[in-house]
Image (cartoon, rainbow, N blue to C red):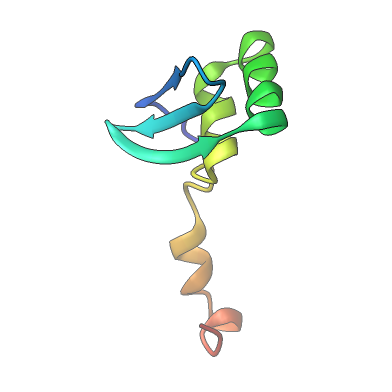
Length: 75
């Protein structure tokens, strides 16, 4: 799996965390979710954490899997 890049986050004074991907808003976290996110970013790889929290971590073989013969009848 390729390593995600292009993510950034901003922590606002009110505790809200804004996550952006290539300068476009990807997620807004508030309250307990924002606190969990910040703790996780400090303890791990920030790019991977932000990709997982925004749902942008599924890169690679999704297109090929969709074209597989057993999956062609599904949307």
